[in-house]
Image 1 (cartoon, rainbow, N blue to C red):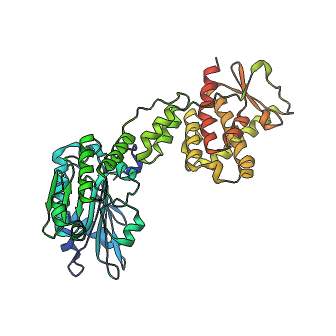
Image 2 (image 1 turned 135 degrees about the vertical axis):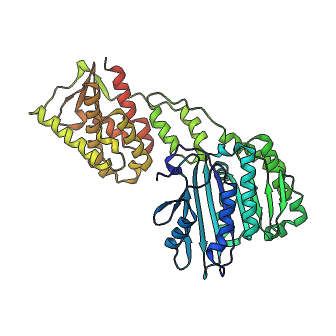
Image 3 (image 1 turned 60 degrees about the horizontal axis):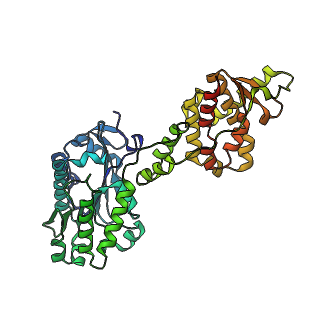
Length: 446
């Protein structure tokens, strides 16, 4: 069974849900978890898990769940994962802790894409599911919201710093999300009457003293100005010490930051920049697109007119070309496990190599002398081999690597010089990319 893994999909916002409640550790585990599973199966319309993962992956069923839990139980805790093989993608991580730890039932859930929850009925069902869980398992706090906006808030652990949450518990309302469940302690801290009079789409007192609060009919509509007004009003109501206008201004700024930006990257490096954007945290994505839309890579100058080419000064040019091939294989050996396309020696493989070095911040992570001695020569040789293989280029060997040239059309290109400049810094991986070097050589080969 091939599960849709969130990290393998195109980067997109998702609905994040976090829940922390308690359960009866004296009761049979199957009995305690049955209400959770019943509510999930009743209300998860369109995103119901079909896979259970413990030590191995199984088709979703009660038997598979009990087996997975049995496999994953240790002295203090147990956890399993629910997933899906079809769109939308789901990652659901229920976990339980046992004495000597406090008996806790924790749930982390992500459904991608967030746009799946643009439908009012689907969101209403999600809320009913959470209501059932919060009514059955005494809760300290629960929330559901856009992952991107949650990250942008600067405190994505229930609205604040994780260490502060661990130290103090949920002692104050630091953020109000699309869906919130406030446990009795928080309700009393705010004042039950004040809590129940919060201006919001739905406010409901649960039988155990918790309060369910939903700001807006749909989770996907969180960034609209109407939803932001509702969010600011609710937050200011629950925290009279905070200024409504300041809250609203901050929320509108977050919406502007998350507003979609159309990529208009420089064509020579567009495939590489698209990968760089995909590597960003989801809340940084649109801002990064806007920045890279303005980016203009320097025009490559590591070339000479063919009429000015340096003649070969090696005794055996054929042997020298084989040496370049051997050098290029060193890069293949370095990267093949992370960049399988490196075997192909194609323009696409150059982009894959560019991105991998950028992703690893290779020029900063490794020692300069080792980079210059052991990385630059293989990169230059590999770049030259791609020009030879794909553009009909011809090596003109030289005793000094930096003088070695590849003749393509009416220019000779200096791949080892390019490789040296390329490996100066993380920024130089973009400014002197192998991708752009190839594209410019391709344009001038005629």
